[in-house]
Length: 99
Image (cartoon, rainbow, N blue to C red; front, side, top):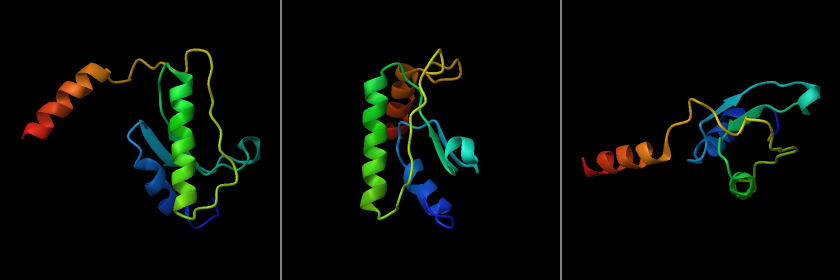
């Protein structure tokens, strides 16, 4: 996205619940000058690609021009020891919604 819209774009990208985090970084030419990076972990590549497509569509609907997006996949990068258990998260969220 254009310089000067990083905070706005980060807010729009970061609202997607699949993400573990989203941040602003000047990555340089080796990463096509990416400045907003979002991270999601999972074991189903197509599901992650579907979420990426939804994020891209959302940005277009907000009139935020995006010149480059990509998904990095490989090795064991799709599974992280710090990833929260979906079952534990569902139980926790159910408890939060009750209170």
